[in-house]
Image (cartoon, rainbow, N blue to C red; front, top):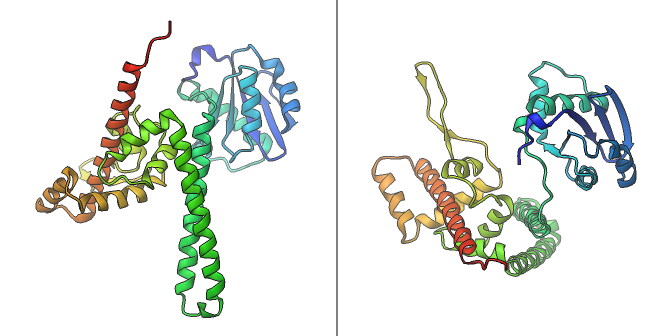
Length: 323
């Protein structure tokens, strides 16, 4: 949901840290430091309830959760900004000074200048939120497993090999437990189970990629093919200037998706399906293998998006209308 600029009369800049929240009020021009606790935040924000105020804070890895909960409770529209975008905005003014008071003022200016384009924050579905945390934890443990496997192969690892192997066994046990918990969570949710079933029907998408897509790309089924390719980081972006034209490259997107899609593309190309046929046709057309594989990655995510969309539409059509 967009925060319409016509209905926003004032903006609050809120710089969040572990213990405090620094509030800048654009109407009074004053800064206020508040304890990052529910009661203190509620008392400080109560006067803005029912006013045409937009609150802007940055994503801080969870320290902003109390603040956003209070804003939701008081029905004050809020935007949780991407820190990279705010940093780029500040950099465009050539400014470098930084402290909590200055940051809260910059968040106010960012919200004031872009109010019409900023999405209002909405609380995540508890099931979706849990799935995201479980999948993120699994990615962390898999990365640890790779590190330990590499250490085991090191030339001087023989003296500590038993310790490394014990840790690897422990990691495997935790990863298997997470896999079981993730599968149970998906199976118990009608919406997630429907999306998972649609994703499994796409060549190349296996039991590891399904929960990753459900967690990292919950927008699947609501985007067009260009949007979903860009979000997955497999859209070819132009790089032209005047008469100069360079090769288009795939950049950006959510960093967890591209490596998983690459593995999915390799699996699809080794099978007997339309994607494998398309890959062979690209190679016959003298396309480099990496270009052909990227094209298959893009096809996989666009097909997945379309199948989830169709499944959701079909579900909505057959759902009984309440009396």
